[in-house]
Structure formats: C-alpha cells, structure tokens
Image (cartoon, rainbow, N blue to C red; front, side):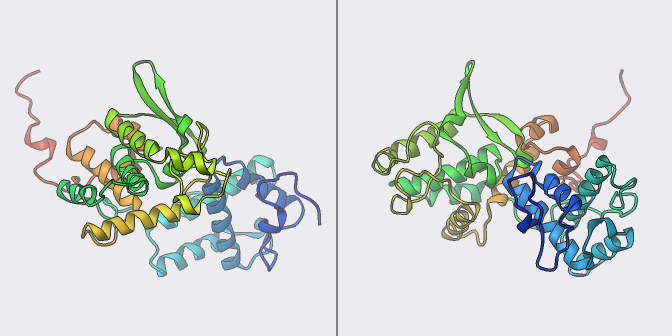
Length: 328
C-alpha cells in the first residue's frame, strides 16, 4: 500500500473497513483535504462526515459519487430528523472535498454545491439548547463555592464562556501565555473554529477570576511539574495529572463540569454551548450592535449569528414603531 505524503491522518484511517477511498491518488487527495485544517476537531469532523457518506452510498471511490447519491443522503438525514444545521454542515464537508478535487483538475464540476443539492431551511431560532436568564446565571455562579482549586477552576471555565462567549474547544486549549498586554488592554489569544487565530479583549473581572484559579493551583502545578507560561490554563484535578506532562481538559470533561454545575443550580441539563448561547443572546437583548457581537462570537457570517437572536419575533422590538419621514 502506497504511503501517504501527509502525516496527520495516516492512510489506514482514511480507508474504512470496506475500502471506501481509493488507496492511490484519490486517497491521498482526501487525506490532504482533511489535513489542510489547523483544527484537530475540524479534521475529525471531516473524516467522520466523509466516512458516513461513503458507507451510506456504498461507493468505493469518491469519483464515482453522483448528485443523486448526495440527494439520497440528505433525504435519509432528514428522515432521521437531524437538525438542519447538522445536515448543512455534513453537506458542506462534501462540497468542500469536491471543490478540492476540482482544484486538482481531477473533476470539472462539484456535485455537492448548494445549487445541485439545496440545503435544508434553517430555523430563525436555534431549535435546541437554552439561553439562561439573568436570574439563572446568578444561580449557576452562586452555587459554586470557590473555596478550593477545583471549584475555582470550574467557576473560571463557566465565567469565561459566559463573558467571552468562547466555544468549549477554545476553552480547552487556552494557555497561560495566551494572556498578554496589548497597549493598555489585557487580551487573550486563541485558536478559533477552523484553526483561525483570534484575539479577544480580556475584561478585568474575567482576568481576576482566571488569576484566582491559577494562584490557588500554583502549588499543585509546582508539585506535578505542570506549571509555566506555556502550560494549559485549565487542567485536571491534582490526582489525575501526569507528572511533568501538562495536558488540557477534554471537551467531554468540560461538558460534564457544566452539566453537573447546572444540575446543582436546579437548571436541569446544561451544556457548554448553552453558556455561549446565553452570552450572545444577552448581547442582542442589550441592543449591542451586530458588528460588536460578531467580533465577540467570531462567527464567519451574520446569517449564522442571527440564529441566536431570540428577539427576531418580538413585535415590540421592531423598527416600524419608530421609523418615520417627518424630518430629514
């Protein structure tokens, strides 16, 4: 079997047990397409989406795929009642792959474009998840005692998402050295969705919460050799760390932290993205300009951002009440 020239995902992982991807040129291009992303999470999602489609279609080579195969896959996902956003994301992966093949000159048309395979209609409001009220946010924060390093860590994680609207994958990989001064302002650098480098202002209250946790965890980091500027801000409990090998919390770990704290606060099932949704929704409710919210959320498009606007159907908050032509 020919060895791939890329190293992030080996050929053995590109091929599924039934050999969906060609082991020569096509497999190499697929691997290069997946590996071009700087984000590990994006690479995993690309691979998962492509495997799902190839298993569904029964094709052994991506070049055998026809528009009808993609339409059938979309219909099967709709019958399984997957969320429109999920379906659109999976179809977008296919479209991006075929665009990559077209750039290589292997094909001359993309069978997965929105024109060939229309995406499902997106709801005006996000159909899943929740946005917390101010009272619920206070309940959530007040139920975390903050009298030990672990509680201080959990509080800081939740507070950072609520204040900065960070994604859980972004929170996981924050390093101490990512916090720095830019002129008069504190900022935090991080890798956003898709591996993009981003810089976010770091308000004093958020920095203070992080500093409190790092100070409380200072002895633990010294004893386990997991400290230093280049180490991850949020780390596992003292007894679960590997000596001299600092590692970040996993997204699953943070998901369980938020879920547990939500239950203790009497808020039911709570996920990290609910906290991000809360931050964005609250900004809309406070009439923060869309461009400012976009700078905070780091969405690629206004259309995606507007899904979070819970006030879209609010008849009271509508420009028709104040629009007039009485003066220039």
